[in-house]
Length: 97
Length: 97
Image 1 (cartoon, rainbow over the protein chains, first blue to last red):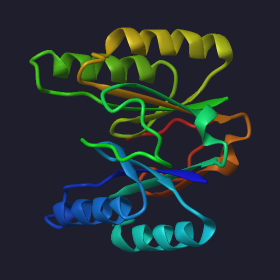
Image 2: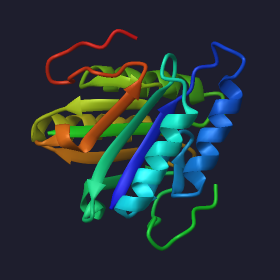
Image 3: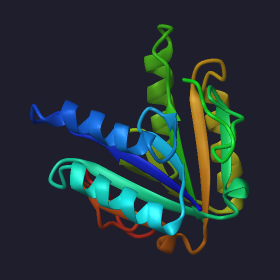
């Protein structure tokens, strides 16, 4: 299934930059970065449970925002992409940014 | 239906800031900003056609990225939100950022 992970990390406190890097690094292990703070992750339920746990552990619930969107197995018909970085398939391709 | 709109606007050329503001302004007319460059838009097919047209007209296909994710009518079960800005319903609530 495809899970879209998007995040906003606050730089209000000095730890923000570290959290941003950590969250991006976690996502990189499970999916493809498609925009600066958006990852598309093709995961099975066990991988998703692990990814979710790691992200919730890394963010600051007081100031950061984490959003997960479940696009399911037939996610291709739910995604439309335009411009830079378009035309790749997260199940088969690697996106060079 | 809920359409998630996410964008990356490049600041490579001096027009980037203007495009970013324009794209955000277009999205504000159709949905709720949930993160810095992510909007959730509850739209009917006619509104979606209009929104899509305006966005594709405003972005620079060479350097910007626009992504649309179609969450359908039963989108509530496809969204999970954590942290800042959580617990609002784009069909009924206004989010104060």
